[in-house]
Length: 495
Image 1 (cartoon, rainbow, N blue to C red):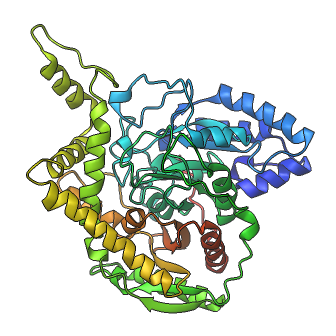
Image 2 (image 1 turned 30 degrees about the vertical axis):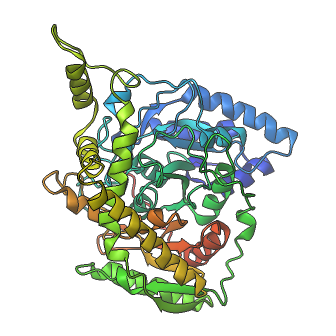
Image 3 (image 1 turned 90 degrees about the horizontal axis):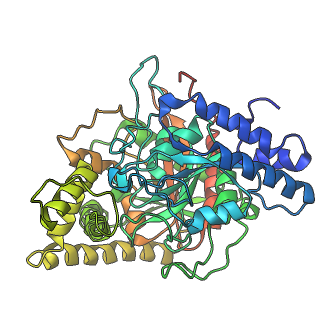
């Protein structure tokens, strides 16, 4: 078989079971593709020795029979996941040289299922960003280009390296994390599938924390079927994470029938934003028509507190970040700045954090510290928490009224060029999360599915939001949408 790295998880699994290829061959094809793709800056810590060792072990396991679905499949791991003996920096200078002595629960589950780790993937520093431009490793670059334009585009953020690697066929799939859209937005920008499961479905243990009440791990894959296969391997109760749910994990792949007859799909009127490009609006209505043609019933719904979601998110997330990142001070964690004679402990803290954190992380820590300070706690943080409760109730009311899933755009535009949204106005960048943050605030599952191309030939995605703990049902609706949209475009290789 040629071009083994271009296979998806399901195809590769079936080829391995039939004996058409081996995990070693699959892994070698991916490692070769990774080495030829340095221009994308997707893989930032390559682990070929670990990959080959695991591939050989997986081949033995498959020969013996009874191997799980993920066995032998080469994947990439976002740099936010702690991986034993492998640099795990969260793309930050302050964690330079950190090699954990333990493995995150999610990456351990994937390893136990026999998957092959090819290396660590680029991301925004501490997962703070929507364009992968805040990384200590430099920008991750999308494999997509606009028409005949050579301008480098963002693969989205913060899981930009994961999105770029999957879209460019450097790995069969990758892990991502989603705090406000960091799986779904990059998936939409790169023509891949990304699912954020219900909060508590995947363990957060061993994942470097950004905002603990919002963070959730999920897979980034080439198809909805692949997402179902990988998500099942990642989920499950973990006693080491107090927010992890003690619920059985269903066979998500078995639930992919594509039959959505009689399902009620809600279209929220509040997501029709001023200035939304016509192409996004058209894609959204086309998506609704596709689901209708598949037998679903389309209903208009209202989520009245949507307009407060972004402001609430950008109070809550920085507040939790300022608390979580306080530990990186050069004493408890993190590299310590070089001090001069006469410097005391205050100078040590100041220099360490000024050198170790990038501008975006500094900005969010400052905002978070401000909204948690004595005079402003009630005015900002407590008010944002109340708004969050109202947003969650909006969704509960809609689902209680019989709606099975909600269809929205995934992003307000196609991918933009690196450097196009400059530091001058961070709010412009924050607006990228307008369709995704509500899902994190409410703790719901959400999936981005590629559904078309814009006039410049760039992918556009649609988002489906599901009921809590019903990822199987959500994946099935996404599967029906994927089949109807028939998205097969791939970026032309320029790297």
